[in-house]
Figure: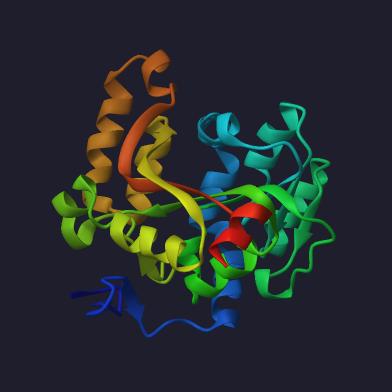
Length: 275
């Protein structure tokens, strides 16, 4: 498709999934994420409490009405913003995170967070809900990732993820300048079609795909644009300067070009019927 930041963006002629080439190694990914949490792009996000809380609350509002009773697991939980929101509503929740720096922050807040990769994690119970927000696009093998975490779901449980949508208006309008085209942070790029294909290929049911909106303050948006899409940063900064604080500090739902995917693991009876 194109080149950006030293990586080629390639589209699969079979399924349509777009990936960067060459893919970084697992060791390179782990090192990059730790560096990002320490002094890179994720450090800004981890420090933006208002934004993190607003995003977590919005996502929880989407999932909670369809969630069965039982424990939750947030995979790729970062410093624990979503874990905190779930716990605040009286639900049993824990997290899983690969970054040592992020895990230390989450544990310091009193949350149960496991440190390590999905490939190495062995849960001691099944979950009623597993979430993985802003995670799948970072992984070398999205298929193996979804296969692994859905095996930790109890029958009838819910899996929820968000991924960048390369068919979104934002992606089409901005082209290669789209902020989610961000190698080596993001390795794979989905569309609603490829996301649905992934979930259905693993026998997950009731697949629902909808646009996802992230509540962001204008100040935070300006910082992120400066990092990922510098030409657009002056616009956000200009708005932050001329608008009153009650507007610049308010987390506005922004259509950045993501999709929210939920699916359900078949119940025991349904699985037997399909078998």
